[in-house]
Structure formats: structure tokens, C-alpha cells
Length: 343
Ligand SMILES: [Zn+2]
Ligand SMILES: [Zn+2]
Image 1: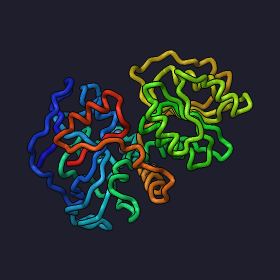
Image 2 (image 1 turned 90 degrees about the vertical axis):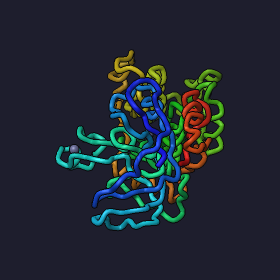
Image 3 (image 1 turned 60 degrees about the vertical axis):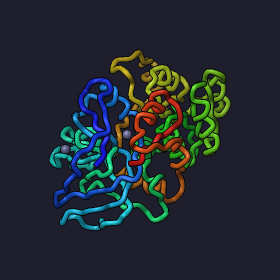
């Protein structure tokens, strides 16, 4: 079968190659990949910057497809089912995090498309516990977004919660920011989404999705916008989805006292200049949100099934797997939104 193989940890060195079709064991499911989205972390992997990558490996971890084979211990999943799968491929099952279902934190976890072969290929293998059969009304294209939506659901609904009366500020209108804004909106919050001039098209998508207020911070004074809708107090919750230190500091100053910031975006370096003084003085709760876990997938599929989140709206481009480089190039240039590859 054709597969997009990342050969080593240097920049690039990725190629569409012919490899053997994967073979499943008794506890696994073989899936014919229908759609597989390009994630920001795939770009880091492509550039050789992703520390957890174990090349040579086929990339791709956000996908949907159809089951073509199931192992003999697999129950509730059959050939022909339309599915998506969590990225977790292996967990130790013995650490404290595994025992509480926090598989995203298991130190021995192995993920699809990073440590084992992923979904930029005709077929991918998932462990039975990770596979989710799609609700009838969720199409395969929308379902390819489930992983990203699960990350947003984890941040908005599990690491904190949004209440009806909350004013929520989201930084970064990329796919995760747009999904985060939609989940916060579904929860009843008043949602402000902040971006830059290069994000104009993305902010327009947010407007169409019914996000209450979009702000290009290079053209408009975000502080004035926040003051006017919060009677000068500041927002109740910030979701930092851009990974920009400036956005975090802006969030710290625009947050009301006792407010909550959830950090979703990854910073380009580990140590950064952050206004820690204000975190103390305003009694700010600063929370990290990493990836997703099984409970987040249930929430994500519920949000898709009930139409509370429009996943298709954030899919901007689709390329055949053979044209993978055009897709990667688009994401690297920051053009479009979610780019999907079709094997
Ligand atoms: Zn991802
Ligand atoms: Zn574990």
C-alpha cells in the first residue's frame, strides 16, 4: 500500500512509499482510511522538531475510515462500520494515570502516527479500545476532525467548564481555536476570538459560525472590546490556543480577578517571560491542557452528532495523498484552515 513515510528526525526526508499492508492481532482493528487531516504536530514532525517522534514512521493521526478487518477479541465493531479512532495505540495500563483513564498522561503511551504507523496511508491499525463507531448522522469528512475536537472539548469541558454567564476570550483562530470557540459557544458563553491580520480569512469563518465577536488585534483595541462587554471587569475565561507568549500576557491582563486561563497552544520554547506577578495579585488559575483522553472523545462525538459544532466549516482544502506536499506547504504557510489528505 501507499504510505507517507517520515524517514528520520532531520528536516523533511519524507516520501510516499510502497510498504506492506499492516497485519492485525486479535485485539486490533484494520481501517481503510477515508480522510486524514494534517495537524500542526505533523508539521513539527516534518521539520524534525518533534521530540516524541520515532522514525521511520508513517505520519497521520486525525482520521476517519471504514473497518475492513477485526481481530477475534474485538466486540461491537464489525467490517463495514464507519469509524474514527483515538490516537492512543498502546498504554501501560498500570500507572496511576492509566487507572484513572488519563491515557494522555501515561509515560509509556505510544501514539498512532508518532510512535507507530499512522493514517497518511491506505490502511491503519488501531487497538479495539480506541475505535469509535460513528453516529449515523456524522459523515466521514466531519469525523476526521474528531481528534482535534476532542482536544478542544478536553480544554473547554474537562480542564475547566464554561458557564452561561461567562465571557470567554480565545486567542488564535486556527483549527483548534475555532473548535474551542465553538465548544465554548455551545456551552452558552459569550465568545470573543482574537487573531492577527494574517488570520482575516479565519476570523471570517468564525463570524459565519456565529462566534459573538472576532477581533483583529492589529486593527482593533482588544482591551476596549473586552472592557465594553464586561463592564470593565475583564473576561471570565481565556483559552490560549496560539502558543504566542504575547497572547498569554494579554490574556492575563484582560482576565477578571479569580479568572481562569487554559493553555492549549504549545510555545516554541520552554522558558518565556510571563507576567507571574498578575497571576498572584489577581488570583488567576492557570491550567495546562494536553491533547485528549477517552472521555473527551465521547464529548466530541456528542458535539458532532447533535450539530453543536460544525466541523466541516473548518476544513478548507483536500488533496490526494499523492499530493501531500501541496497540503503540507499550505499548512506551513498558514494558508487555509484544516487541510485533509485522501488516500
Ligand atoms: Zn493532532
Ligand atoms: Zn500508563
